[in-house]
Length: 115
Image 1 (cartoon, one colour):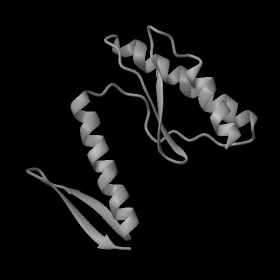
Image 2 (cartoon, helix red, strand yellow; image 1 turned 90 degrees about the horizontal axis):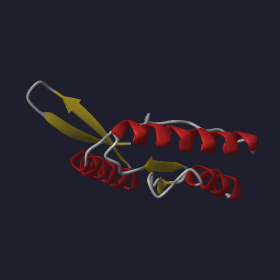
Image 3 (tube, one colour; image 1 turned 120 degrees about the vertical axis):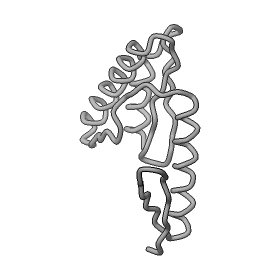
Image 4 (tube, helix red, strand yellow; image 1 turned 90 degrees about the vertical axis):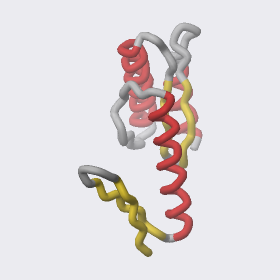
């Protein structure tokens, strides 16, 4: 736990007033690094730099670092949608059901099945 905290602090040390990085816990060991900027490319670069610092710190502690999603530019609307989907998935995980998204040309439906 201390190694993870130290690694996250290493990433946050790259935050400045101009580039206000944030690291949020989703569910251990999943964390999200975010920054709100008008200069999109600068924001992506800042997140990548923080990821590199965190990875280096974790690997020095003999841990492993995995990237689930590469840094990308998202709008507030997309963020709200990600949060809704994540929360639905969390509820289903607690209930013992699995969500499966089926996409068609006209609509997207979500089916649940017992695990």
